[in-house]
Image (tube, rainbow, N blue to C red; front, side):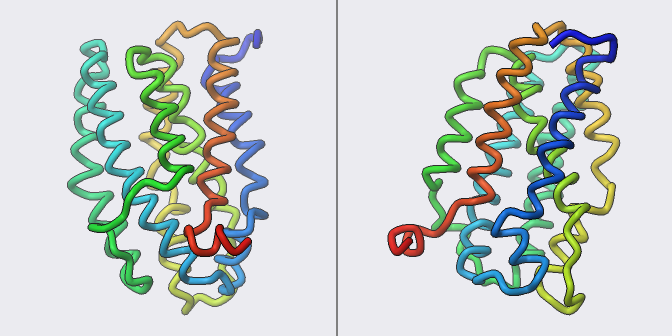
Length: 212
């Protein structure tokens, strides 16, 4: 993966190309139309809650291995997930009666976490691995148009398509560009992250998975 553009710019372009297709995934087409089985969305929100908590650990891990110029940013993000993002997630999940206390990682969520754990001692690769979620989530939801603005799905889409995360994404990409990671390794890590991100979007509650 050799080009004159900065590495993060090239990786972002790959994520954007992939994530632009995600609105056609079953979960997001159902969200847009307001026809998604609430049990599927409840399961997704519970798994996303577990994933967010794990994401705080990821930023804490990044902080532990960060150079001085990135230390405060990573610490603030880890804290921000607990202080802001999880509360926001719980608030927006209100209409779906989620049981966050009893949620346990699904096969797809566990696989995603295992992937990050396999990179635990490689800060540079971890930065790249996070990009499909960090950037792809915003790209995908910015392309979802909820038909019924009174739908309980509308507020959730609005939060994550608002552009509030642009600065965080830019800072993250700057860290990738300073990392010195091998471009070919970065591409391999990114591809695996994109695959796991799609599997995360497509997961089903156990009772529906067994019936399919």
